[in-house]
Image 1 (cartoon, one colour):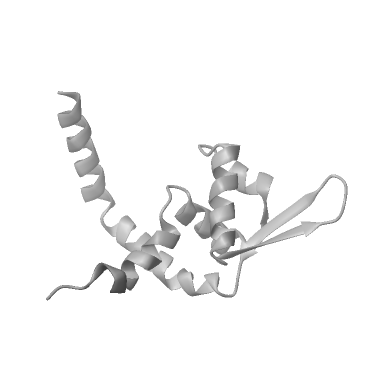
Image 2: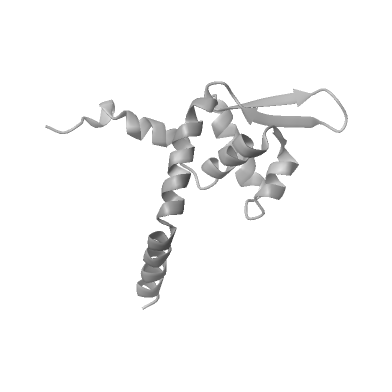
Length: 119
């Protein structure tokens, strides 16, 4: 008898992290500390402003990050890892380690898939 989908907590956990940029945002917040929107954008040159906003909102909605708005002109908004979100640090570290350890294999598969897709 398999695991019932409604009982699969792995799926629920991955649901929080799914998104091309979410793990990268979290890694930057873990390694760089509290960041302003513009600083995060600079650290991820390939992300659009719209996508960064979307991914940050989703992480905030899940209580993974904190968003602090300072009442000043121009507006100042800072993002940081919440206490709850800090529990993801060992998971992201293991995923990063796995990705680093298997980078050659992953890259070969991508090249192989791209080559076969082009044919």
